[in-house]
Each structure stands twice: as structure tokens, then as C-alpha cells.
Image 1 (tube, rainbow, N blue to C red):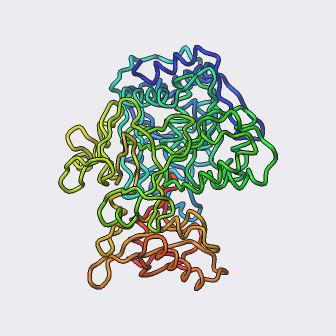
Image 2 (cartoon, rainbow, N blue to C red):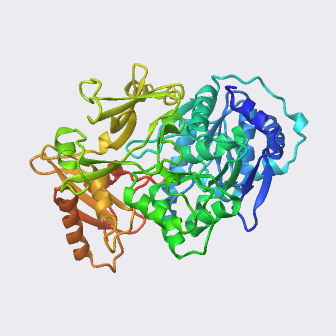
Image 3 (cartoon, rainbow, N blue to C red):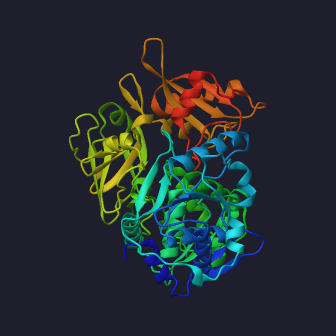
Length: 549
């Protein structure tokens, strides 16, 4: 079954459900009930002129109505474009401009918006109409008014914008058959049992991991889902673990920082039952092995099995899932000589006590339908195991390209291989990620990975964890020097922090900082999904526009 609507209709025949825990009281609906409501909303969209092939953008927090509108758009044989929510109140003008740019770049025929966010959608004479999400749902049109079109495997189901961590966000085209192939790959790799598994998520639905992995998958496969909003988690990180305990959650996911917050909550919280958890994915940002181990230790007294938590790899250009370890295999790492890695681009194994030891997480094997290879970024020669190069992917769930971006698409593919822009190496069929090619800092002929520096200085007292960016900046002789920008507060001991950052930099990568810049809280540039934007930070540094403390 290669259409999303076909899978939704099949899932609606079962008794499985979605529970929304975004308000004061949980609200539970069967997928069948939600689908019937979606047919009603689809009739409303058709009455407003939405037809086959249209692109419809949606701007809304996570609610039951939002999922209903998602289905309604697909029922109309239209393409879903989920718009990011504002991350920081200080950048609302920037958010409004970015929203307008995405709507235009996606050629949207309409925008469906939550009433609270309507002020951020400016409507000019050349802009598409804006529909109120609440009105669409509350009309309660007879579902019989919906005129079902014929669906095709090549229809674009989702236009998923990339995070834009190293460039401007681009619309990834995800046709029905590409999305379906990745959903099937997830079910296989994760060994999903639709009658047993309960998925728990607070991830934003404008990000691929939240939208595809923890919304479209349970919606199309008929898996029980417990769904919260990002603000629910951020306001009280301990609630994430409480939801797993209350509802018997078996699968969940979050970026590295969220597991750090959950660890703190588990250490001081009441007794929970986490024994049902079998898939706790750590992804979407660089994974710190120490953070994973700390969470496993904190979860032990709550009955959590150590093998349940592990990292995986995904990206919007393959819908979401790229590689996946065997479920319950836990955290697996590779310990290599960092000096050899930086100078010879080779992952040479060493013992943990080696003075140049660096521990990197192993991200599993390609999911079914995908193939990986690592090539030399300059010669394009395929590299052997443990040699670092660019990761390339081909297979059934690779996007056909970016929407109306022939320039970017020319660079995206090498034949039928997708160029990821990631530096990685392989070990016996498993993939290990080193970093982004564009983020690599070359100092004195050595490759310095910025995340190594960021991780090393992130726990210095006075620095906001997860809010550190390292990058290279040319010195007077044109050679790159290391610059570290970190968020802190004005009342902190700034000189002491600068000294400690420089010391940690030398200790972790053997390179001193040219400059340590301390900036105001919540001022570092991030993508809509919370990823650090190193290239934009470098630009702000060069322009002198960083908000220095």
C-alpha cells in the first residue's frame, strides 16, 4: 500500500487510539474517530477551493485538531507543509518573515493557522488565503460531503523543510511511495508490534522525527500514541517519563539535551515504572555517550532496562530513518585515536585509557531499503571501513530532491547516491558519524570537529549547556583559528569562564582558542528544531552582531 491515505483508512478500521496530554486533562480518540472528523474537515477544505495537487501550509501548536487537519489535507490529495513555531520571543519579526518565505517557497495555495498564531501570518495581495483551523474543525460539515479523489504513489504527501543548520532551509519532496517505504523500514528495523507498542512523544510536529516517526507512523500503522507538545515537556521535563510510566510506553525519542533534562528529573522524582520501554532513541543532534550512560543509570531504579536507550541516525532527505541499531542492543561506541582521526582521517581503535582516546557512538545499520557508502569528498573514491569521508545513501526512501531547487539538486546527488554532507565511517556494516563537512575546522592540517569542543566546554559552571558553538575563523595569515561562542549571564565570572573554555579546548582537541565570546542567554542562532546554526553564528561573529555580555 503506497499511499498515505490508503494506510490511514486501513488503520481507521482498528481500535487503536491516540491520547493527547497537552491540556489539563488527557483526551483520547480512536484513529477511526479522528479519521471521520478528518473527512468532515476535508469537505470544508474542498468547499474553500482546495483541490488535488495543492500545497497547504499549517501553523499550529500540537493539538487533536492539528492531526485532524493533517489527515484532511491528504484526503484532498493535497501536500502537507508544516510550518515551524516561533522558538524565541526575541525574534518574532524574524519568525514572521521566515514563515512568509516558506509559504512562498512551497507555492502554498492556502495557510491553515491556529487563532493564537494568526497575527504572525501577514497576508499581502499576492499571498495565499488564510483559513482558521478552529473554524474548519468546528463547522462539523457532514463527512458525506467530502468527494474522495483517486490517490497515486507519486503524489507529494509532505514537503518537509530541512532544519537549515548549515544553509537556508529547503523543501524536501516526499512522495507517497518514498514516505511509505521509510515507514515500512521503521516498522521492520524497530520490530514494531502494533498490538503491543505504545509510542510516546512530545517532539515538534514540524520536525521530521516528530512528524514522520511519531505522528505519521502511528497514524498510518494503527499504533497507540501518547502525544504531548514541546512546551509541555520543556515546562516540566519529568512529565515525559511520567507519561511512559502511566501509559506503558514502549517507544520514545528525543535529542541529546532532552535526555539530560530527563536524567535530572528521574534523580529527584518519585518512583516510576519504566520497565515497558524498549526503544528510547537519542538523535537529531550530536550524541554524548556520557549523557546516555547517566540516563541509563538514573532509570535503573525505575525498572528501565539498560538496552532500551540507544542513538540512531536520520535526516529529512530519507523521510526520517537512516540507520537503526538492533532494538534493546543499547549504547555501542567506538573508541579511536583522536590524533590519527584528525590528521589522517582514519578511525584507529585504541583502549579507553589511551591519552588521545575519543569515544564516538555507533549508529547502527541502514534501515531496510537503504544502502550506505563512504567516499572521499574530493576524489569520490569509495573508502574502506574506518576511513572517514562523506556519507552517501541510496534506496527506496531517498527523496527525489528539493522542491524547485535545481541548483541544490545538482549538488545533492552523485548519480543515484544522495550526498548527505556528513562525515562518517563504516565498521562491519554499521555507521559512525563524525560531523558535518561544512562545520569542520582545519587548524594546522588537523581536522577539528566542533562538537568535540562544544561538548568539552558545555558543562563549565556559568555556561548554558547545549548553548555553545565552535567554528573556524581565518586569522591574519589566512589560516583558520578556533573561536568559541557560549551563552552565559552577565553576573557570571566572565574572565574565569573564558580561561576555563580555553583550557578545556586544549585538553579536548589540543588546539587553543583564538577567541572566546560570551553572549546573552537565548541569543545563539538555532534552527526551528533547536539545532545550533554554526554558519550563521560565524557570520554574526564576522559582522560584529553577536549579543555580547
